[in-house]
Image (cartoon, rainbow, N blue to C red):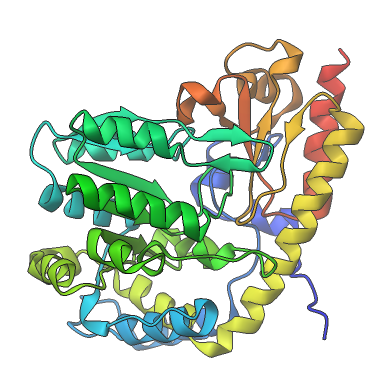
Length: 386
């Protein structure tokens, strides 16, 4: 049975939202930058939040909000991943979870490996935890984007003490292979370091793509790794503040359990309520419909770029709603997003924010209606001919 793609809300309704996507720029700008999507909430989330408002249920998050069991069931159902519930705790958001884990697994001044181009907050997160950033860029091959395992080995041999992984990767949308993740785990084990894997985009991996949670890559990965994830990207609940930290080995579970209670207290109650509803089986149909829409939009973006911005380079991602587009052929400098905003009135994420490897690139959010995406690319196409 085919899945009907989810439809985005009308743009006049979206412009009534008060989130940063719709308030940062004036109304003549199409906002395709920050990772918010343009769809109505999954019905189960809306019902749960409406009921909480009716009850005035706006207090502190309880000690057992139901997130642990909801996520354990979701991971088994969607990924075939069996999680020990004892290894699951929650906090405000993924970045906060990463900071707390970095503070445990590194010492001040330790170097932490990142793989640019990568999610910009990773850089500040490492500094916030008291560590230093070590850059080992992804490799771009004929097969797509890959971890530079020899480069990571060199950095570890030189003293780096942790790897901060993005899986699926932001901004390329790469779901790293099981073999690559297992090889990374072996390197971490050899040098006695931890891997922290940000898997916030995992629910958005396309059904045609195999997704491997880092902790499932091998027995070694389970021993050296931690996963931090959330329902917030897939279900568009970032403002409600809830994320999960997951471990699957007695030693790493002990680390997660040792985190201060305050780490859990920071979780928003509405975030917890929304996460439980998002991870419930009744939200699967909505998520499948979203994935169908994103698959169509990812392919539409390729068609639109070929038609209107033919010198652009873009590869359809394995996951998510973010397109990584190389515009260096146009000679618009390091940050083409600046010219696109000024002349085309389309807001995109500047490539350089993701690291030096983002020079000449932009990140475009295609979690919108096909009409909005078409309008945005056509506007960009006009300035390529000016």
